[in-house]
Length: 166
View 1 (cartoon, rainbow, N blue to C red):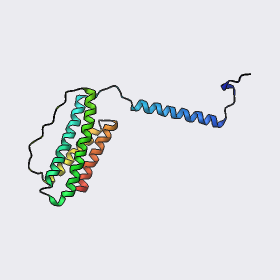
View 2 (view 1 turned 30 degrees about the horizontal axis):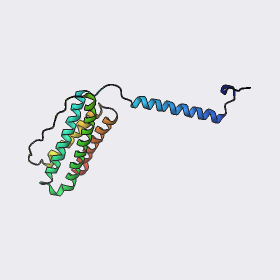
View 3 (view 1 turned 120 degrees about the vertical axis):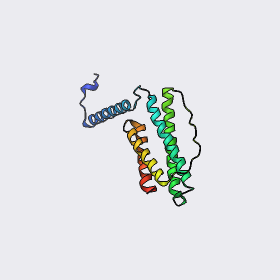
View 4 (view 1 turned 90 degrees about the vertical axis):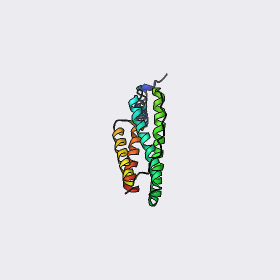
């Protein structure tokens, strides 16, 4: 006589195993749907906002490096600011390249500005405060990795102002 799977009594261990498997499967499905591409491409306005953030980060890096000449007692702190803002520009550039590939919009080349006089410490603080506020504002309009990246940039700018350039 052949016994069907459904006619045998279900042990508590088997029931818990089935329930655990179902919970893991549901979680995996939810995560895969939540992390999947929504099919909507990034708009040119979103890419432009990221580009403005990257340009600001690059400018802050250059300005912090230039300020070392006039503020040698803050050289270590300014070096950290320059390195962090350069890293922000690089991370934003990578995200822009990824997003631009999806949009397939024409790329623009950045023209480097002629060297200017080193900024004052107050100007650096003001630039970092503006960058912090703009990154936080933009982070609230984004989701996923991009929101995290912009939030991290905002937090770093706030820390640079409060800790490195008091």
